[in-house]
Length: 187
Image (cartoon, rainbow, N blue to C red):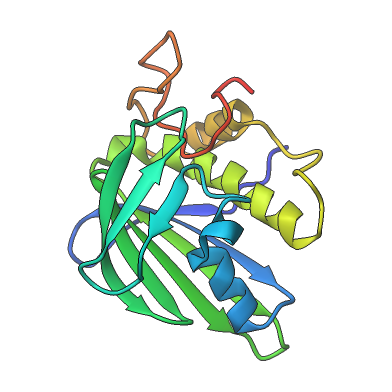
């Protein structure tokens, strides 16, 4: 049985989104680096993330993602060490860092979607990415014994997440959608 940690939701403004949450036994500042520092992001984020500064209106450059062409985004909000949001393609990314009472810190990733039919595809991709972050947080070189993207995607479809968007790198464009991870959909 595949364990899914994502939720599909409709935001107050009507936009569809997927949300995944993780907790780490680290201080807020450390988890903030996971969300905002290019060196830490390189351990789990699917694109190389380059920004001169994190302030509203600043440009972020995304590159070296085999599933997406090089692109730029715009920082929408930055409130270190608690919130960062930016555009990424036609989507919006929101990363929230919250201290928990037991000394650990929660990281919430919300991917606001341009189209609801990308929900299963993106949730599966973010699940893979956050599994890589979990492994990095444990000091492991890579996630071990975690489900592959395709298994996660199929589980999200079975969980009735909207699906049907094209899958980059897939011969069958009707099976799913963009994987925001650096592996191929069938990895």
